[in-house]
Length: 276
Ligand SMILES: NC(=O)c1ccc[n+]([C@@H]2O[C@H](COP(=O)([O-])OP(=O)(O)OC[C@H]3O[C@@H](n4cnc5c(N)ncnc54)[C@H](OP(=O)(O)O)[C@@H]3O)[C@@H](O)[C@H]2O)c1
Image (cartoon, rainbow, N blue to C red; front, side, top):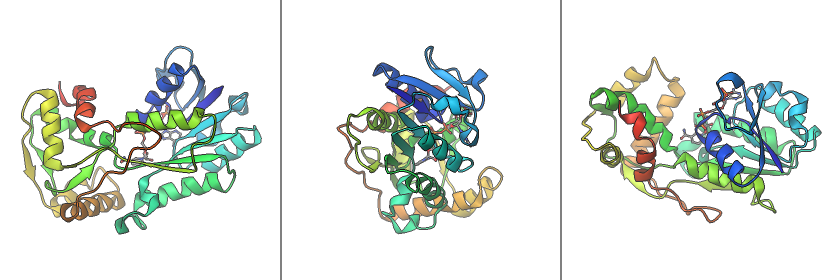
């Protein structure tokens, strides 16, 4: 069995590649910059982006993991379908499920809907993964924590569920390799709801020192983020946090027999991002 993994050099993709190798699956990886891909020996790295995959990259490929880049997604799926790929596992987002009113029309829902449609309009052989809030979002706190600055947090008592990227990779590996397709839509979240203060305390415990924070207003967050983040993403985040202040986010049951990883383990796995 051979799988073609797009986004293979990313947080989820690297873990997925390793999961598949452990399962004895042949792995081909797509990267825009193979010289810097740094993937394990035995992985065939193909240069390209979704819209520019060399046709030979699909030779003998049974399944593909689709990273959600809008540019080139239709060309990619057309190429894979023509080459006879019989399973598509697609990275989407829980925002598409519309579980919360705030998700309707959000930047994430709109973007990932385009990705899903590009696949579902071309094949029925798909499993769409809809992960919730990834704990990798907390890497944003890496710079102030490493530098000893207080972390500047709006809505510190809002409560969210954070998902280890390893769990997404584990579910993707199952979906790519199971004898029968595991379902057309798989939703997944982390195991528990934690306030931002608790999230910070979890990182503090992992690195063995207190991390101070200061509460900032939504307006201050908007102003500070203006140079780093598109405005629609900033608004999506503020809405998420203000909603989960009054109504803590609730976890979903973990799918496909996996056990969702606690944030304490994620913080240990990422200690290096928060220490010098
Ligand atoms: N943040 C959240 O809470 C959340 C929630 C639900 C879903 N998601 C989805 O999960 C994604 C993040 O996954 P991740 O952390 O594994 O990603 P990541 O670490 O940002 O890595 C993405 C990899 O994909 C490749 N890539 C990026 N843009 C590309 C493009 N336009 N065309 C082709 N390849 C491209 C890059 O590899 P090369 O440079 O080697 O080509 C990169 O290493 C988000 O983008 C979002 O769609 C996020």
